[in-house]
Amino acid sequence: MALATARHILVDSEEKCLELKQQIAEGADFAEVAKQNSQCPSGRSGGDLGQFGPGMMVPEFDKVVFSADVGSVEGPVKTQFGYHLVEVTSRS
Image (cartoon, rainbow, N blue to C red; front, side, top):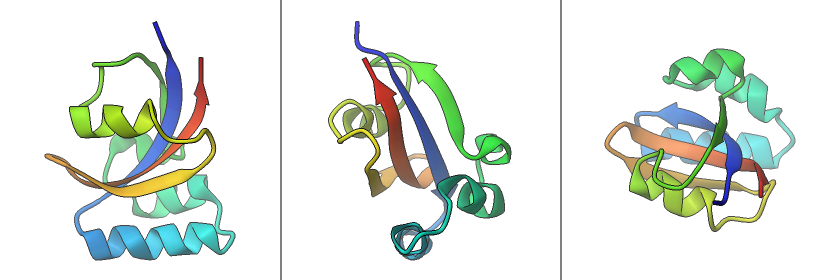
């Protein structure tokens, strides 16, 4: 089974998500942006979600995590929780 590790930032609007994605593209540290902006408890640890396999996250999230290039920042990804920026940190 494939396993991935990822980190994410959860916000309540697509606009905010795009704004933060731009900041990261311009060199802001993903973990710092997560700590300051993410509405998920994982924000405290820089958005780190640890390791998980397919089907352990909501489908929209899963799809990105198991298809995106490792190290790329993807999003906005809309789920029932809001809008996510997702960075796949490893996949095996």
